[in-house]
Length: 157
Picture 1 (spheres, rainbow, N blue to C red):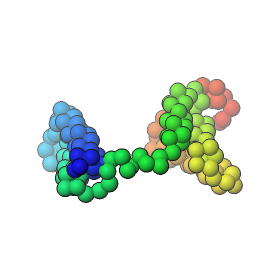
Picture 2: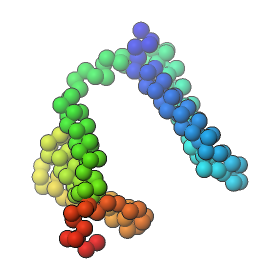
Picture 3: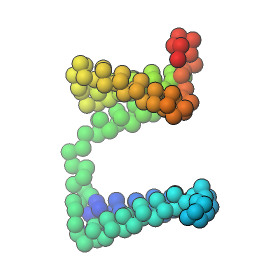
């Protein structure tokens, strides 16, 4: 019964993630505390993730938390499939249409089809979020984002 607890399997999953991150950090060179290497943060972050994961898995072994099957009861699989398909489309169209257009389309799709919100809320939130994130990344943090192959001539930014 204990091995059917969601916390146990979730803890094992995150233990694997933490171990992988720590291992990759180790391979990147740790350095010292005064002069950390490129893997220093990854290594320690991976160890912290692994420690938390062990505590969660132990809780699952003790029989705490819901059963694994209870987590999926009442799941809206249609919405899960729609989100996955939307993210795949976002990935394929990202460079061709650009960050702003793809982000705007994704947010509008999520807020009108997947989990409907009134247009008076979804349209301004999508516009502000897409343009706001673009502004922060592109103009403030100087991250180069794709503008889109067909739209570069029409938008002067």
